[in-house]
Length: 260
Ligand code: 16G
Image (cartoon, rainbow, N blue to C red; front, side, top):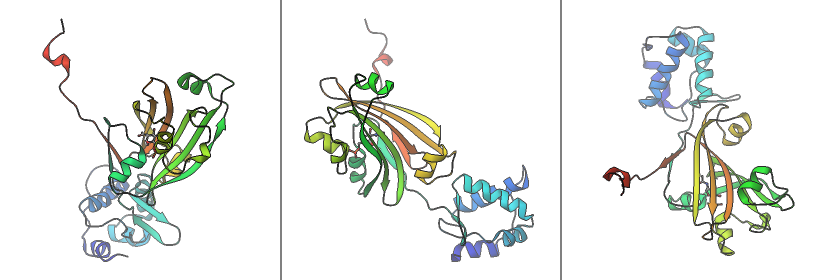
């Protein structure tokens, strides 16, 4: 156990915050200790029995509090070695006014990007893809699905669809999709992005290494060439705990009164 948390759990005379069921009081007490820096990411929690004794509650109460904290992603349990404060993830800011690629975004922050390919190939288009990308039923659509990571931290899952005319060889992409499109003069110049809150399902949560039901952001990006042709339709799922989308707002025309 790390020194700091060892001292915290040994020295502290426990005063649980009042209100609500006992396991929630214990949960809040642990959360407060993390937020105030008395215990830190990576620190180990005492065993269920030691904690129950120390706080003077039943082991069932400790188990319930810990389970909730694990579900919230605040604690992690490692088989055989115990329960730890979850590592702090670095939040990433992305501007909502610039059309950037994931690789560009991360490079600007000096972060190392990695992609784990989940799928890539040519398929018959779905009705949605036909509508958005302007394809017919006999056209092919290129689909690329990736888990995007920085270092070992997964940030997002991206599932992109493009016309096979634009991306005839999905296997030829080395790292960046936009860099690849740039080579054929097909890098998008404009995009519409729709962002929605979501709770992550089991599969996506597993890929993003967060508990099922954690907060996430569903983002749909439709990108266009200068000619107005839709080039990309991407559905992304970003981890809610790692991404901040930042928009710059300016005083709009409508504030000065109605136009003649
Ligand atoms: C961004 C875009 C995604 C695009 C990708 C290309 C969002 C929400 N999504 O992640 O639509 O396909 O960049 O990145 O911003 P790449 O060039 O690094 O492959």
